[in-house]
Image 1 (cartoon, rainbow, N blue to C red):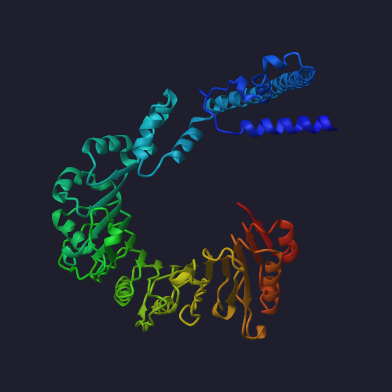
Image 2 (image 1 turned 90 degrees about the vertical axis):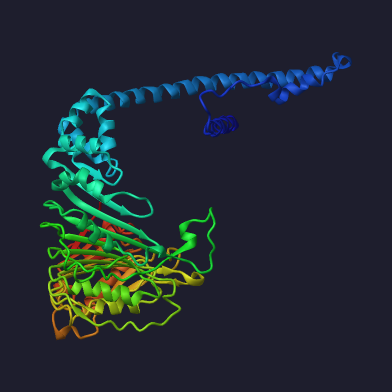
Length: 546
């Protein structure tokens, strides 16, 4: 038994020693002086050579060294067998992998390479693929899909763009980016060089970074300048992104060479007063999506074919009213908009200053889909007032995403559920709640209470939370049947059997269970199929995993 323990201890020690990081050039030789037994010979004196005690000690240590040699030889033999097992398995895998690549059909290999191809680096990736092998070169050079995504900017070279367009052919889609900052470039020269590619422009991004010395210039002034430089027709353009960054010097910081812009400047807001009415705007017959980052167009913005608005605003404590009012004004002036995605980041003073958030309502006559992402708000009065000021009589889909807040003095604010107004949204059919308490992972899971009376006509409800959910109905079940037909719990990281059973209980209490057709559990890691089945029952349960 003792021998077995010694053997295993020796093998574990060798495994631990081999787990270190060694280079191939590492010297694995051992010096004689490293052995403890070698010290015996260092202590030998001529006068003690005839000592009987010395002879006994040497004989005892000789036996141990002989045992070490036997153990080492046994370890070498066993390790060699183990290494041979790995060699055989790796040779088998290597053979299969090499055969697997050659056995893949061209159609599948093209799909794999296309998936590996990056966005902005698509051109470089395609060139790299073409140099791997003759087969890769044949597949990439002769296939338009690898050259169809073209990135065009102020630094682009005409030869490279022409090369990509010649290979991409009619499938070429150009992503154009105009940047206005401290770096000088000549837009007229750009149009002289690349205006002939306008037929392939599909995505357009216009960015602007402005300082106090720019005297209130906005990204929309630059858009107007582009119109005046050259009138062009962009028949394939589907999406336009306008991104603005307005910076002003912080009053309490001095400028030094080693100080970054983030330390010297702070965000500010300049209202758009650009007049587009008399401008000869570009012809964009297929423009459908407008993205605005930290800016809001004026009502005179010339494109009336926009159906999707995606707006991101970092709300500033001294400019929040202008930001929200200008956003609403543009939405109200664009009746073609049917989908709105609004992302609002909270401002530093959100919990310290009480504002009057009474915004005048505007009618959004054709909006059917509304998504709002909320982050870093300590108080939600601004969010509630903003949503209530957008009257969307045709709204059918409402989605809210909230991540909570951790800010002043490390105060933690749990996410907040904003339910749609049933009076203003009578046609609402689908409601999605995604509330993740990212700053409170170690705290007790939040129990989200969803008022069903706010969702009288909703037939599909999707819930993602950090904890459990309770659906309650203040009115009596006999006052009217619920419209809810499908309830989905998706990626609820702390939803367990107890929370799911509780949700089912309250559904029954609210008189919703009998008319509910499906209860979907998708990617909730604390729930397996058996637990979900026990809580829900086989008739209504739909259990999904990625």
